[in-house]
Image 1 (cartoon, rainbow, N blue to C red):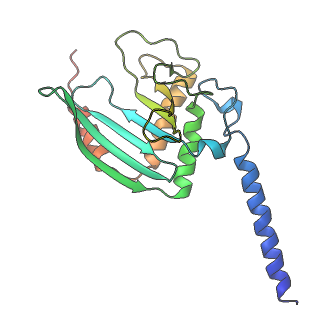
Image 2 (spheres, helix red, strand yellow):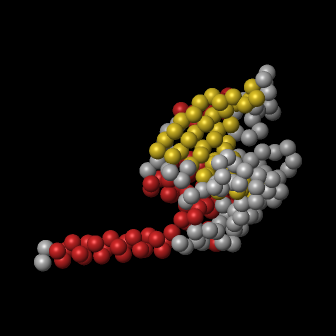
Image 3 (tube, rainbow, N blue to C red):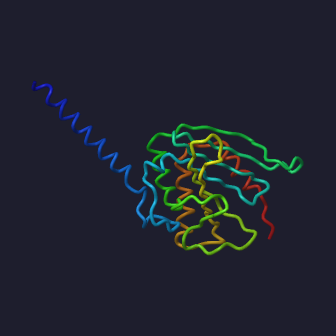
Length: 212
């Protein structure tokens, strides 16, 4: 009987740990004070962990193309590089990479990006910015866009709910929350595996000569 006692204690400890984990999942994903977009309250971490999160870069550039990061609830990260074919007037996929992130890396990335999640997902027509950023000038483009997708039960995208957050470039918003939003996205991207497509995207962008 003495040998069973440590096993019972271990089982009790595991049950307590599981209960604490479940309790944490049932709490709001972040505190209101952590939101960079003025979200008063978010769904629980458990609910948000089921969403797809995208980070998209390259808006406004015809030469570097577009770079898409997509983090799935399964912790799978897909990176896609595309460019616009001027002759065919269509988007061409240059390459796609898939990585299986560790649970810790994926969880930390989600928790950081939830600071940019709107309280409600109102569709692609409703673009959110950091709370202290003014409306951008016309004909300007964000540094990146973070997209939150809550997939519905039907196949396809018909019943999906989507929220889009623009991460503004420095020249359009250099406020406290604008700066923090850019740093946050950069920090998250640095935790992802090294990507040949990201290197190619940066190489293309560095080749662009900005006229004086």
